[in-house]
Image 1 (cartoon, rainbow, N blue to C red):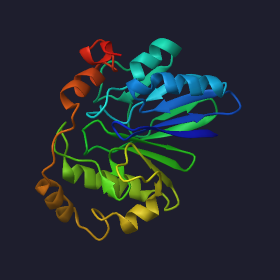
Image 2: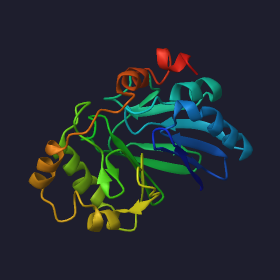
Image 3: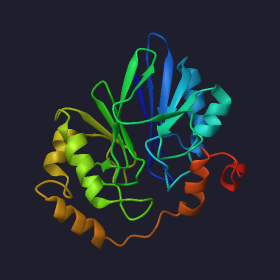
Length: 233
């Protein structure tokens, strides 16, 4: 497998490129609109064909590049059935997405948002905003639910082998990757904490909404297209 981790500094978003070296077919996870040219240039330089774009959830802090990439490459956009209606394939728990010889297994991990998914591919776990490195996604908007998030992380993600590598949707502290075992042991919101502890902590947090919330959510329900936000680029 060819693997690249890409970063958008403005929103602290990670985009992931995975490709099957035999067929040269590639998938992008959580692309950012402003980085579409960067991503397409890299795909071209590596001699890949983008066939799939996958979204972990409807993002509130950046506008997705999914729709633009679909226009430019013909790639299929895939996301939760609870999320954006503009996608080509709706994904649910246990579904498998094939990209050449790669298989990405879908895990439903709601709680940050009701449509949050995580993807598992060859020992790498892409957690979106559900599980972050030493942190978790927030639960105070977009049908977020702290109890649901605790269950998603502890029952779905933490049931995977400890050596499973964790690649989050964001990082605000300079971390790049973690592992399931590491987060079980060292994530301060989860290690040694009960479900009630977690709910109490999350409900007590007072944090400002994402700067792009009002623009990003409606834009992303349209795959990042046909909105004021996308016309500015």
